[in-house]
Amino acid sequence: MRQGQPTGGEEDGEGDDELFPAMADDDYSAQQTWNSQSKDNLKVLMDHFSAEQYDRFEAYRRHALPKQAVRKVIQNTVGTQVSQPVAQIVAGFAKVFVGEMVEKARSVQQRRGDTGPLSPDHLREAYRLYQQETGHVGAAQPLRGKKLFVR
Image (tube, rainbow, N blue to C red; front, side, top):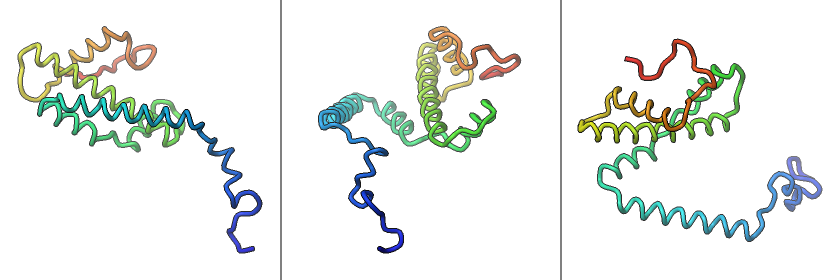
């Protein structure tokens, strides 16, 4: 037997069942159907975007929060080490939150009749509206002396 060659049942993939449980055929086909429908829905949605909306959506898709920076923020907040997958998940949620804030700020800007880039005032109002709709954001108890979007 050569060095580095798997032994026993590992060479035919039998040991993989514990690490990678097989997906049932009906689960797999349901997942494929759902993926296909999601792509079709996204295509229909994108077909109805204005040029400005399409550009914003493409910029949103291209950009991501730096995972290492997110990981450092989490570690400083929690006070312990976190894994890379946790940082990726938090970065994903943060990206969705930022997207919601931008959309709310755009609606505030439009309601006020302003044009051009978003201002901090638009973001403050969007955050205030978000808090009104969802309750407290962030820590269970507000942090004393720390505010977002301060002038």
